[in-house]
Image (tube, rainbow over all chains, first blue to last red; front, side, top):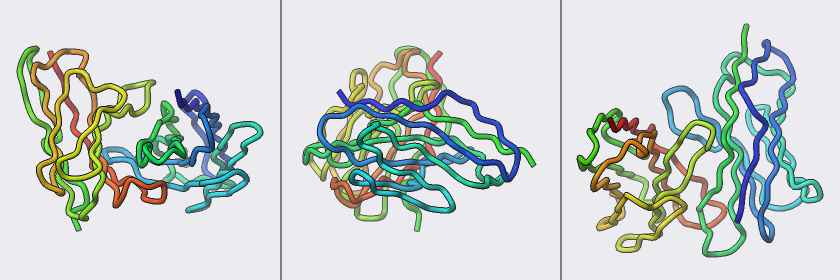
Length: 115
Length: 114
């Protein structure tokens, strides 16, 4: 079945540091890929997505590129802020019509940014 | 705009008790779903619904029941709570069940079963 593997956390960075959170996946066909973010005490919010190979999703300074050859969708940001402290989830949705909005999530990576 | 509303926010149950977690959305979304979030395991799909009167099982459905009598509401029922059901539960909805409809999540219900 489909699966998503994220780098182990937690990750602690200083403000303005470069961020990379690794995500690799296993899926049949050609899934769509997502990054969701969860701020303390809240539900998950969609951060960015990519629906086909070589697509780059971007939002709020975060970027991720859909790499079919390495089955990866790594999240990056050039300069993190304290307000970026949150849990980040990588997820995929299968291409088959019956999958619809059913998402398979990774285990999440806790990011803490210190001033 | 309330979005996805979950109640209660916190609940403590004893083993064997039953309860219903409520979920309501005011966005006229067709698709609704329930996930549980456990440390080191991410979110796992419990049940989902693609429209009123239609429900289906997700990855971890055992011990949970759902129904979808209206578009707005999608309650999750625990018939006989077990300690293994201690978790944070999230309800999520989307406009359709297609790939271009992002999920909107509620703020979660933290359930402890003793």
